[in-house]
Amino acid sequence: MHKVFYNSLELILTLKPKSPFLIKSGVISTNPTLPDMQFVRTKINGVEQVYIPGSSLRGVFRSSVEKILRTIKGDSESCCITGDDSCDNRLKNEEKEMKRKLYSYEIYKKSCKSCKIFGNTRLKSRIYFADAFPINSIKTENRFGVGISRLSHAVAQGPFEMEVVVSGDFKTKIYLENFEIWQIGLIALVIELLNKELITVGFGKNKGFGRIEVKVQKVKINFAKSLSSNEIYGIGKISKKEEREKYGLTEYDAITVDVEPIKVSETLFVERIYNDNGWNMISETSIKYLRDKL
Image (tube, rainbow, N blue to C red):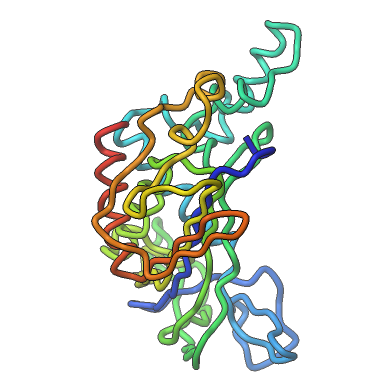
């Protein structure tokens, strides 16, 4: 499936804290003014600044997608990647029984829906999360806390100091290639749950940290062929019948959205660009498709 390009979705996002939030750094900075529990940093144009790693965002989205799938369909649609029943272990056991390596289409067909998006050790991920960098002034504060012993009810650890971001905007990108429509629905649903504060990001969730606002500023959708301007096709609709059957795809992999793109260009592929209003319609329609088809 990765050998041919069918379609892609690119979301340009801004992230804004609605409460203090902290993505802890794994190293200790040489700056003596920073607390031990500091926000992760990198150098941008030679200046050290806080940022949100794409891997942190990916972890939030994957765990949320897994929870959604288990809520809707049970454990059958989302494996435990560290458990004995993970897709990786199941595929290995099947290969032992069949005494041959599985083909790529068999691996995709037999993987759970979560692994079909985020991948496993046998299947390449089809989604990418860019690091989120500041686009304006970021304000941080130091907060203090202690660890209380549940036995003695006295201070067991601390006091410790935490650096949290309290205001400012970050910009990032999510890129999804060769998608099925239900995959857009899951990504859209996670963004909706983040905005409803039902999903949080980073350290200190039980302290009220980690609530963020996610705004989709621009959407780019590319197709390998020209389509009606109000239709969005997944790979099941675009691919040939033989390929659909091999990969376990559905033929009716499409949605119709009542919104026009703000720009359309055709070079090697057909690119459509939507603004935030366009995304709202795509999000609503793809989530409805997800609920109807799962």
